Image (cartoon, rainbow, N blue to C red):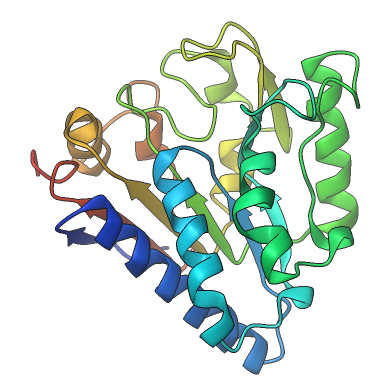
Length: 242
């Protein structure tokens, strides 16, 4: 049974990004010092972009061997490989290429160039996870104003899928309409889950996710917790309704 979530509130989104990046670098270095090859899942969105920029800035002073970090994604937009909407493209541009993560250790979700449709793409990623992955050491997630997490949206049928690693999503309420997402089954096997949330427009979703007894069908973010720890990194705006 995992411990109750920890909530860290930072004055600004910039301070939040710096804190998350510093903590992540320390965790990766500690894991490697203990002989572990850490498996890390990234997220997308504006706060993730800020964290990625901070990782690139702080990485030279950290004792992390980036060639021995394995990178995954919790979700991805099913678009062209060069689309600016792809989470993987943003992460690669912001820090993955700069810090020297080994290309064979970066497991991007398929694009429209790799699979004929979004369900085939999800099935392909599921196979990749089964072949190369193990339970995630650290999973970073954003939260939408509607409480969605990864690309699991309120009221959508993917919330109840328990027999797959990844699922295709069509008709997303947030563009682009087609996405790939890991399922709750996989998200909840991560050792550490970090929610990164900034902005007052997300305060109601944060409060709902952290309230006792919230149904994940209403606020999907309430349905994810780490097996060892769950940390909510918030700025003042996101924390304003706690």
